[in-house]
Image (cartoon, rainbow, N blue to C red; front, side, top):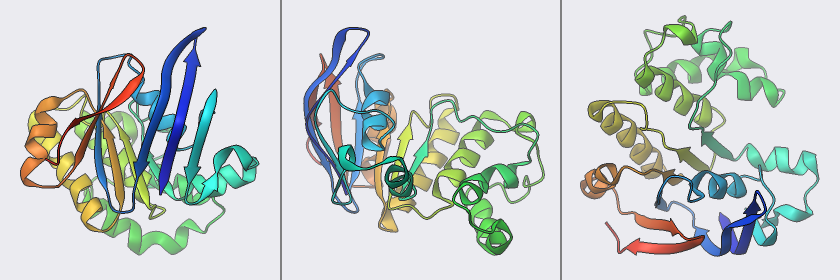
Length: 225
């Protein structure tokens, strides 16, 4: 699905990542951990083409990202759902309208997705909040809405950047369960997190690989969970 080969990335004049290689195969589940500022978010951005490596190659679905024009990158990104750490919304649109934004951006008729939207909102536990505005949502509701928005296009890969960083333990478990369900549907999942308790809690739910960034290098932090 997505492969990084000997990738390096520099920030502020210094090397943040160097000689990073990893393959996210179809249906795989990975955790990405490491200290704050180690480059977890940067690695995720490299995976979906928001950043260009200083050296090395990023391949997604058999396409070398460096060879794609802007339109090609946009088409490729439709197959990758991203849950951003800060999960920004348009505050003048309700939850349903925010979740449908990727469809509108892709030029699709959002009116045709009404049934799928209802199923998706029920799946993330927001069926009763479809008319709410983003400022009215709790932290957990915002994260679940962000997950729904990330998967509204039925992507092949889901990348989640600290999806449980601002919620309590009970909600973090609920979000983890949703991501595990996506993996069981055949989606490739990569979760960047500093929460080792979350990774340990996943042991009974999913077989995963744990990757750790330290000193610009990517290492396998443990065997299968």
